[in-house]
Figure 1 (cartoon, rainbow, N blue to C red):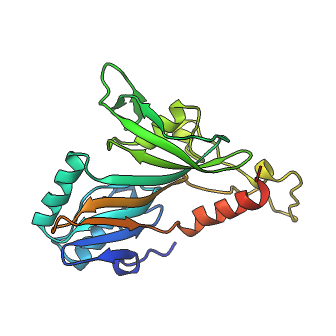
Figure 2 (figure 1 turned 120 degrees about the vertical axis):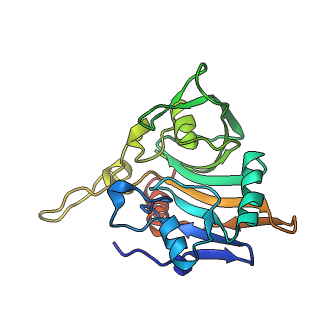
Length: 241
């Protein structure tokens, strides 16, 4: 797999901030088991050692990430995250056909020692996510997910709690869809077998909204990556109501 340079994935830049469209399968921070693969923070420091990640995305999650060019900007942005003043919208495909309008899931989340997240009224921290349907198919739905808090795996666990597991999210009950899921008669050539329609958790950080150094509202959107786009095209072709 070819990994891009930082400049290849920049979607916004000013004197203080960089925004990138993170590809899937690249970790935000360096991971031991990925020692041969560059992380986003490593890619940043190759360009400028002063660059800092303002937040993180899971390894499989694609989408918009903010990078501060200096310590003052880093502090300015992270304070907004801490005060829940940053608005984030994620796009997710779930393994259910639903029409949601401002479904608010308010369930406390607890992360155990193995980084598996659980709903826990005793040990969990307050966590809120709002879900809206963008497109409904026969077997799936494309959702807009707005996390009001920023807990680990928050969208994935809150969605699963409503019997809406994300596609390919096997950790929280999601299944890997194949063409036979959406198309009745699928023909394979000799030696061929069914291939998954998606091979990662179907989650993309679509947009982020924050105040810049001059207190102007900045909204940045990240186009869907190719795998996500192809998956939706197949759903539109074979899984329409």
